[in-house]
Length: 114
Length: 110
Image (cartoon, rainbow over all chains, first blue to last red; front, side):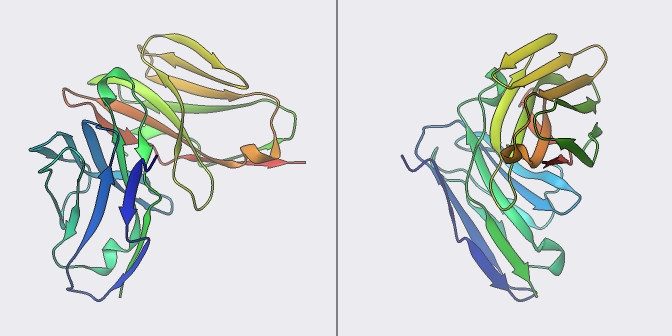
């Protein structure tokens, strides 16, 4: 049972570099989302998707892009990394949040932007 | 996060009972989740409340009052392994966007 797979686990970037955080789930979940977690700020929603081809912004979308071309994958793109994007990133999925289905989280990505 | 308020830290003694409160804005409310997060790990699901009242699940119970915008998580017979952050999260709107509070760091002492 793979569940939610996030890669990479650790990443160091220089300011201005771009990169993609990968997220894949094998549970046929409709709902996928990206959160960032910073000390004292809790988990903040970046972008989410309620199905293939449908994405929407969360609380802190600026500087991040997403797409959902398949049910399984939901990559998060940083177009031009900034030190303010240093954080721990979690991908999470659920069959359907609307029916109280729990979120399954990936193991997280520790990103440092220098 | 979007007016979801929890205490920042709490301390309790092993074997005791602790109640962690969460208040939220009621607009667009669909349901409320509680998650547990140990240091350095991903959050894991504890409970979900959509109707008023108490949901009991072993040592953990969760209460919801929709009209008051209030929930609490009750942990009984505390164990050292319960030392963790407890996150309240609200599902809102037509797309059920899930927003988390900042979390409560619980320290269980011997």
